[in-house]
Structures are given as structure tokens and as C-alpha cells.
Length: 213
Ligand SMILES: Nc1nc2c(ncn2[C@@H]2O[C@H](COP(=O)(O)OP(=O)(O)OP(=O)(O)O)[C@@H](O)[C@H]2O)c(=O)[nH]1
Ligand SMILES: [Mg+2]
Image (cartoon, rainbow, N blue to C red; front, side, top):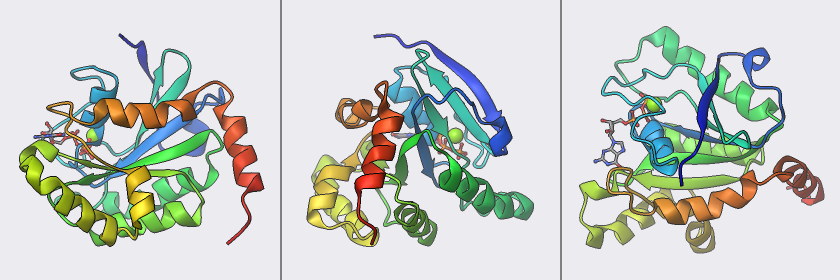
């Protein structure tokens, strides 16, 4: 199936975010981890979301409107030593402002590298998502770079590092390869219901019903 994808906004501040209220899922993770490649794989596009070999290229929030029904948001990446210090300083406030204020956000896909244990910043992001009570999936990508037999052990390390128990990991942790397309259909099947029309209202109601703490 081919999607109609439009880069609707390239935003730094909330005033620049789209205002049409369509549901959105955002993709967050370290610079160069494969966020843009994952978005392209989900949309079955070679190169819509811009990918590059230069880490930290994506310094603003890219809102891709898909089929005029929902957004996939490519967030700026964190934690790359080669990124200038001013840029690294701006990342936290830019992303926290987005996460803490964005009504149409129904969930975040945290993208990590299946080959490595989560970094301190990966853990910090997971903590923020918990703090803001944002639905959270963890996608361990570049799975093609290790043998399939190693996946379970690497997934277990990831789950432990990010504080996911076995039940949470079974529901919310995925191994994928954007290059080989492993796990892409399974990931889509889990996310897609949250992007259906009315998802924003359903999400707000679910949060309302959830007891604090
Ligand atoms: N082998 C392999 N390479 C991948 C995969 N996903 C991404 N890459 C490569 O990793 C590099 C970075 O990918 P991007 O998608 O640009 O990463 P990003 O997270 O969007 O990076 P920033 O925009 O800089 O934050 C590119 O060279 C991709 O081709 C994957 O699943 N397998
Ligand atoms: Mg990118």
C-alpha cells in the first residue's frame, strides 16, 4: 500500500507544530540510531524522512503527515559527541517541551540500537516518558547487524537497562531492521490502532481514567 506523505512542519517551538489535532506518534533516540530509516520503513519509502551519515543532522521536529490522517514525528537525536555543544544544550528543552505539552501525541517510539545496552540518555528519555505518562514502545533497530540467535540476549539486556519487566517487554519491546524490514509489520500492527480517527480523544480519556502513581 502506498501512503501519501507530506512534510507538514519543520518545527522548533510549539507555535510551529501542526494545529489540526490529528493523532501523532513520535520517534526519539540517539543521533544516528536509525529513527528516520525506521519511519521510512514503516511508510515503505526509500527516502522520505531524511537519513544521513552525518549524526545530528535532524535538529528540529519533523512532522510527516500521512494520508491526511495522522502524523509521524521525527524528533532530533541526542547524545552524539560530534554535535556542537549549543545544539546539545538545546535538545533537552526542545524535546521536553514537546513531550510535556503536545496534546495530539498518543505515543512515543523510543529507538535504540539492538547491538548495545541502553545509554544513560536512553534511560533518561524512558524516565521522562514515564514521568509525562506517555505511551511508550521501545524499538531496538539495526537487528540485521547481529545474528538472529543473539537477539533474545540483547533484548533482555535492553529490557533490564530500561527497567521493563518481562510483561512490559513482551508488549512493548521489538527487534527490527529497517534495512531487511524484519519486525516492521509487527511494529505497525501495534502502533496503528493508536493512530485511528478519534485516537486523541480516546488517549485523553484513558489518561483521565488512570489513577495517579
Ligand atoms: N544495517 C542497518 N543500518 C541502518 C538501519 N537503520 C538505519 N541504518 C543506518 O544508520 C545510519 C543512520 O540512520 P538514520 O535513519 O539517518 O538515523 P537517525 O536516527 O535518523 O539520525 P539523526 O537524524 O542524525 O538523529 C544510516 O547510515 C542508515 O542507513 C538498520 O536497520 N540496519
Ligand atoms: Mg534522522
